[in-house]
Figure 1 (cartoon, rainbow, N blue to C red):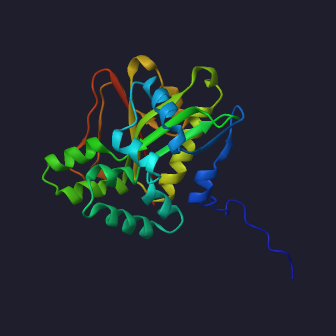
Figure 2 (cartoon, one colour):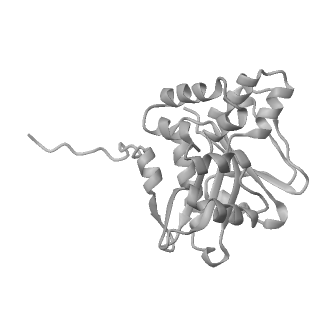
Length: 241
């Protein structure tokens, strides 16, 4: 029988698994991008501090307990339906902060000594959830937006590791995770004085002008996300299918 030749452009992206996320991938400057663990939290918190944020307390506790991102990990090993059902179980009768931690992703770029020199924290979209509650959504309805939207809470790279592509690699891997789980949007913001527009543009995000927010009407929400005059918002939407 003749060997079947794959058609050009017919290959599909390799699906990520929870195991691969824990084991990680080779990254620039002899680092490895992987899921953050309990041993990383002090260094991760210090790195994020250089970007003006900190690990959210509930998320830090979840990382230390080994439960952070649990819904995401189960979804990667199953299907989008698995993910939705798992998150629903973690919503009923649980504290909102714990439910939000289950869809939060903390990635690190670790050096040869397995010490983080870069970190990316993506969380549930707290601001969007608050806006939904203000618009009369129930707690469950508002919290469910966590399976459609992710917030880039913080991105930081140690001084000695900058300029090597570590930040963009972290962003790329995070997008792969959330895209596989059918998220509609990842977004975040940075202070205009930090001049990070080219970084996020290079990672596939649209960078809005200083002070310009964006609407969420394309996913049926009657409100949007605002930005302060000294903030630039960046967004990456899932392509329309």
